[in-house]
Image 1 (cartoon, rainbow, N blue to C red):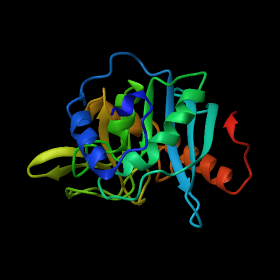
Image 2 (cartoon, one colour):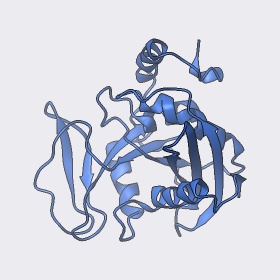
Image 3 (cartoon, rainbow, N blue to C red):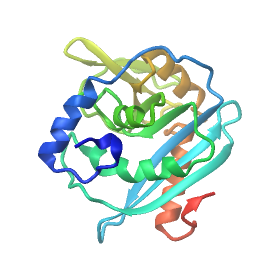
Length: 229
């Protein structure tokens, strides 16, 4: 069984096996071309049932203006299992990806890259299956620690686990809570930090995932039509 050919309904045991295979495919390296379009991904859940609202918003990297958006309303087929969240979220995100007529040069996910207990966050998984550079931006630490992060906008400090840098704590605005940035796939630490710095416009969340968050919550409330916009 392979998650690359559309077999999304896997057991926890199968997911763990696939995760080990996917880890071997992660490439942390410099970006190979300039970024013209950058995307943000996010999901929202219906607390009353298994409905998931997923979306990808594509922005012009120079202006950070929205170019196109893709949304999906789907059903969750995988339970909540710590460390395997990508298997819960990516099936519907991939449907949103397939709808896009403009594919981005880089994706920012609302969720971690390699700053993950298995070094296999949603950014890594999504980057591998889309063959696209990805950066993970999490709102809370899963592993590691940091220190000496200044209060000013643009400040960053290495996120350390076992003496290894696995990402950065990054402050997008003066005195805002930090977010946690790590490469996912086909991107390195320096590029990840530089790109998220460019996307920091005074909100805690970088603009690609902030716009994605706004979008999926509007979809959840019924304020937005599903599909390609």
